[in-house]
Image (cartoon, rainbow, N blue to C red; front, side, top):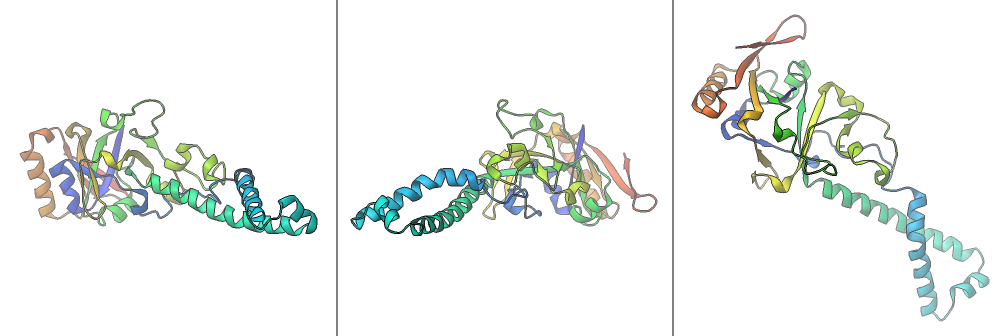
Length: 271
């Protein structure tokens, strides 16, 4: 299985350094990455079950501080206590739900995503990610062990997964979604990308900079080809050839050239 990464001309440094960026969700071009169409972290019923004992205990404590038992207060003011407790519960529910959701998303933002496509000839992808055909597309061997490095069956990262495109998740509550629905799904509006992704903890990166860029080492054998866009400059192509010639580890990497054939059709001419 061959998979492809569209990049602008300056990302020829991936080939030179054999390092590639895994991007945290908060830095993705999709602002909703790792945030499926969810209404809350957990259902109102689950929230009430979790919070009601705390709210009742707090009311009892405050009543006791004033020398009044909660039972006596409820008898003296029937209905009022219930309304007050419901108001406190509602406020606690909102605060708790936002905090829980924020905590989950903060932890997810410690992961990095390498997004690839199973298509090397998407005109839209060439325009959006490869500097309007002036950049490159890296070809990877998706069967290489670098893409299949799960620690065990419980590991939801370290291996290639195909992205599912959905607009209606199986549950509107984050706590009820399986991990793959959060990590490996996007809205249908992105399905033209035909994305596969591998996710790794950013802590495993080999280099990171002050601007939140995390780079991971790429095994040379995982790279199988580089495609130059039909608008690539002669300088860019020359630098590409020199990089491949000067690094024996990349002797196996083939070069392709994108060509326009017909209306909005990209053909790859491999040399």
